[in-house]
Image 1: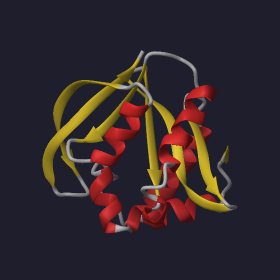
Image 2 (image 1 turned 135 degrees about the vertical axis):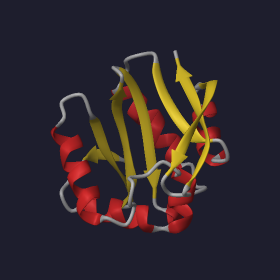
Image 3 (image 1 turned 45 degrees about the vertical axis):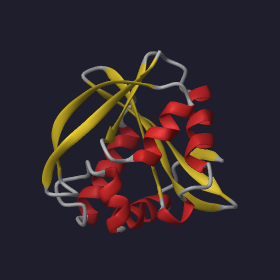
Image 4 (image 1 turned 180 degrees about the vertical axis):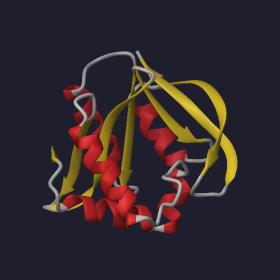
Length: 153
């Protein structure tokens, strides 16, 4: 289900980001979520960064999305994005469960938009606890919204 990111996966990740419903859910995207060059550079830089762990989520030989660990102020953060056609099938939960068995450092953190109920349910199923909220500007929405912070001890 999880494998190393291949160069050909990046175009699919970008296609997922272009979906307006998906982009709204993720909320915290690049300044211009339609800028493919900036997106590609970001992913390539992430893959070169030794502190980043990124895996492609594959379902029936089809790229469904990705999951990543990156650091914010030296704290490990987990993020995941699925193409909308893969939502509601338990794929995010199982992918995150598998990823957390690979990346075992704790505590680990995650962030969601205040209204991204699906991602919040995934985190709760795997033992993440809601720890705080902060206001951040959402590039995808063009407004400041509440971001919920989560912790897995």
